[in-house]
Length: 206
Image (cartoon, rainbow, N blue to C red):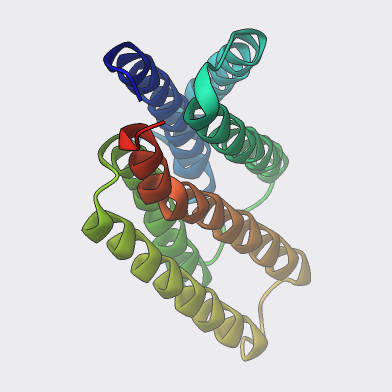
């Protein structure tokens, strides 16, 4: 890859990392509402603003020229993953709006969901960093944490299965939300999984 092409690729990767961080901001806004975190009252507007900017930026990037084979691979792959993240955030926002008229989740049931949400948020943030660095060790760390999120989801399900007094609607919501966060983590893992390949492609000779 020539110096000019390499610089163009790096600019593209930086732009894609910005998209991932916008997805992270939108996910964080929805999460503070759903998990009852501090500042939750401002969560929905913040999430909607970040989500609107994310969608606008995705459309602008899709209309542009990716440039080069490496740019095409990274642009299409990460663009699809980020678009899916945006759709998941939209589902979480809809759940947040629906829950505003209901009683909060029981704290005993909410705690494991909050842990899942925090872990998913961390993975999305780290995916942006790994995308830019392509460091093999950072990729491995993200994939290891991805397995941990699966463990936390199983623990939540075990709790729900043994909770005799939980509201059935709350159980359904918690399962749905946990699935959304698990999928967010999966998309972050997919970005990280290919980051090393992208970095190699950027430095490979034509």
